[in-house]
Image (cartoon, rainbow, N blue to C red):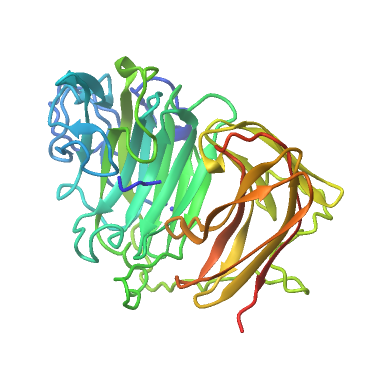
Length: 468
C-alpha cells in the first residue's frame, strides 16, 4: 500500500440485490460453483456467472478456514511501508473466516508501556495470479481514526519493470476510517511517480455501515473502476520508465500478471495515527467474497491515446471564467471548483465579477478549504505566469500553488503563502517546468489550517504561457 490512493464493471442484478448487511450472500439462481478446499459438509455459496465473462477463480469465504490454496497470510514488521504502525501477523486472531466472511482485524496491545498494533493482510501472489480480467469484491470497512482498509493489486514480479512505482499498482478500493462516506480508486505507475484517482461520496449511510461492491475491469488499454455499479474512474493514459530513459512500450506496466491482496492498516502517512476515539473492538475489515472473471479474449493491439491539452482563450488566458463574469456551479467539474476536506467548513459563490469564499472552520490541512481550476497545461521547458487580485475582510494569508494530482502531487509552483489585506492587491508568480508534459495540472487557492476564517475575495485570474 504505497500511499495508495483502476475498469467498466457490469454488475448483475443478482449482485446488486445481494447488498445486505450479512456476509452470507446466496441466491438459488446463481450457478458456476467453483472448486474449494473446504470439506463437502460445508454449505457453499454459488458464484454467479457474468454475461460475456468466464469465471477464473473465486472465494466466497464459506466454512471456518482460510483457503490456503488461494491466500497467504502476509507477515510484515511495523513501519514496513507508509510509516504504518501495524505488524502484519500470520495469526488467526488477525486473519480468520467467520459467518461467510474473511475478517481482517486490527488489535491494539501494549509493548514496553507503549501502544502496539497487529493486523491482517492476505495476498494471492504465486497462487492465483492473472493478467487482465474483472475483479469483484463485496466488503464492509471499519470506522475509526487511523484505520485504513484496502483491496488492491500488485504485479506478480515487482522487479519486471522495476520497484514501485515503476511496477504499477491497482487500488480497487481504499477507505479512511475517519470518514467512511468516501471511497477511493487509484492507479500508481511510472517514474517519476504518477497516479490517477477517482472518489465516490455517499449522500446517505457510509461504507462502514453496510456492505458495498467494488470492482475493476482491467483490459490491455483501459481500466474502469466501479462502486455499487457506479463508474468511479476510467484510465487509459499511464506510462512507466526509468528516470532519464524513454518510456517502456505502452501498455506497460499494466501488461503483466497481477495478484489480489487485502489488508487493514493502522496509521500511516495518509490516514494519520489512531487516537482515543478509535474503537479497536470493532476494527474489522470484512470481505464477503472475491470473484475474478476474464473475457474469452482481449485485443492486445492497443495504443496510448494522445494527450489533449486545454486551449487558451483568445487573450491567451488558460483560466476559463477568470473574470468571474458567469455565476457558475462551483460543485461540478467545469471551470472553477470549491472543495472542503479534513474538517474544513465554508461556502463559495460568484458575484459582481469576483469569487467570494467564506469559511467557518479552516480544518487541519492547507487544502481543507480550497478553490481551484483544473486541467491547466504544463509543458516541459515552458514558462508560465499566473496573476490574480485578492482581498479579505481581515488580514490573513492564502496559499497559492500549481499542483500535479496525476503526477504524484508534484508542485510545479510550490505552496506559497501570500499576505492578503483588506485592500485589493495584485499577485504575480512565474514558474518553468522541468517535468513531463501534464494536461491535468491545477491552479489552487488554499485557505485552510492557518487559523484564518475571514472571507476572501478573488478576481481577474490569469494563467499564461510566456515561453519565448
